[in-house]
Image (cartoon, rainbow over all chains, first blue to last red; front, side):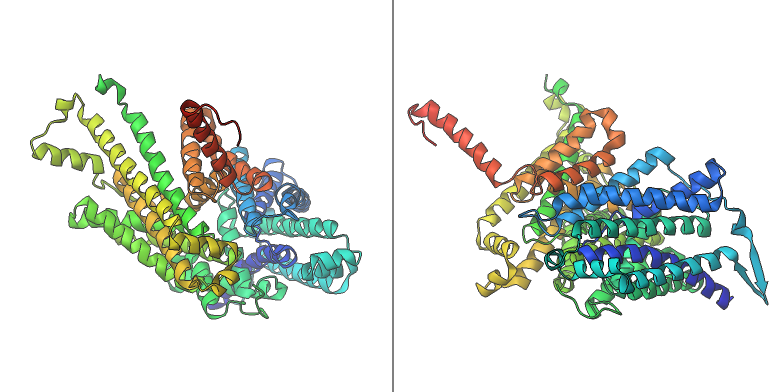
Length: 291
Length: 325
C-alpha cells in the first residue's frame, strides 16, 4: 500500500516536474513567467486524444503531433505575445506576465470551442498493462512516464551544460546585451527556448492524458498553477530544483489524498509557495534572488 | 410615465456595471503603487461569503454584513500584504494568484459552512429587504407609480450609484493628497521614494489593504444583489476579468479601470453573439493592448486632451476670442 502510493506519487511528481521544466527554462532565459504554459500543455494532451481516439493513430504519432503543434504554439506565443514587448521603452516588467495571461485565457476558451467542454478519455492500448511484483501493482505507464521525465531532464541538463546552443542560451540568460555583443543570435536563442519549453509542455500533456485517462480544457490552468508553485519551491530558473520540487509536490499530494482530506489536495501547492516565499524566498535549491 | 422608463433588465445590467467599476477601482489602487495583485477575486469572495453567511445565519442587517465583509477582506489584505512586500513584480503576482486559489479551494471544501461547490442561495436581497422596510414604514412604491420589482431594482441601482460615486470621489481626492503622492512616488522609483523619506512598507500595505477592502466591499454587494454566490464566482476567471478592466481601460488614472469596467460589461450585453466568445476576446484584448498600448486606452494625455476640449468649448461660448492652446 505504502509503496504503491509512493509509486503513484513519483509518477505524478515526474509529470509536474516536466511541466515545471518548461516554466523554468523560459524564466531562466527571459525572466518571464509564462502563464500560457499550462494551456499549451493542455493542447498537447488534446492533440494526443484526437490522434489516438478520433483518428485511431498509434501512440508515437500522437507524441510527434503533440510536439509539433505545441512547438508551433510556442513560436506563435513568442512572436506575437512576447517579442513585441521586448526592447520597448516604458513597458512595465509586468507586461509580459499580463500578456501571457491573455494568451492563457484565449487558449483555454479556444479549446472549449474546438474540443468541447467536459472530460475526454484517452484510449491508449497499453495503459492497462501492469506488473505484479510481490503484492504491488505497477502500471507500465507509470514506468514510461518516469523514464521519459528523467530522460528529458538529463537531456536538458546536457544540452544546457555541454552544447554550444546551450552555452549561448546560458549567456543570453546571464545578460542579453552582452551575449548579443559576443555574437550570440539572441533573437533565435529566445525563440528556440520558448519553442523547446512549449514542446516539453506538449509531451507532459500526453503523459498526463495516459496517466489519468482524462483531458479537460480546465486542466491547463490547474497544472499550470502547480508548475508555477514548483518552480518557486525548487528555485526559479533551476533545472534540478524543478525536478525535485515536482517530485516533492507529487508525493505530498498523493499522501494527502491517502492520509488526509482529498479536497485540499489542490491547496497544498499554494500553501507551500506562500510558506516557502516567507522562509526561503530563493527556493529550496536556489542560490540567491536577484530581485 | 416613469414606470415605463424603468426596465428591471437595464437596471440589473447597470448594477453589475457599477459593481465591476468598484472592482476595477480595487485593482487600480494596488497598481498605483506599482504592485500587481491578482488576489482581488479572492478578497471579493471573502467579502461576499462573510456578508452572506452573517446575514443568513445570524439574521444581521445587510449593512452590518457588508461592513463585516469589507473589514475582514481588509484584515486579510494586511495579513497577505505584510509578508508579500518582500516580493516584487512577478513573485507578488504569483503569490496573490495562489492566495486566490487557496481561498477558492477552502470555499469548495468547507462544506458545513459554505455548502461547497453548490454555493449559497437565498441570501437576503438588498432591494427586497429595502422594499419590506419601506412598506413597514407605511410607504407604498405605487405612490411613485412603480411596480414592486421596479422599485427593487431602482433602489439597488441608486444605492450602488451613490456608493460607486463616493468611492471614486474618495480615491480621486486621495490621489491628490500626501498618500496619493507617496503611491505615485513608489510606483515611479521605490529606492528614490525611500530616500525621500517615504515609508514604503506603510504605504504599500496601505494600498494593498485598501484594494482588498474595496474588493471585499464589491463582493459583499455582489452577494446581496445577486442573492446567490458560489466559489466559481471568485475563481481565476474573475481575477483575470478584474485585471482586464485595468489593462484595457488603463491604470494610470482612475478613469481607466472605470471606463474598462463600463465598456467590457456593456459589450457582451449589447452584442449578444459576442458573449459566447467573451473570454477569447478578453484574451485577445490583453495581448493586443500589451503590444500596442501597454498603458491602456485612457492615460494622462487623453485625459488632458479631453479636459482641453471641454474647457475650449466653454471658452468659445464665453469670450469667443482665444485661439491659442
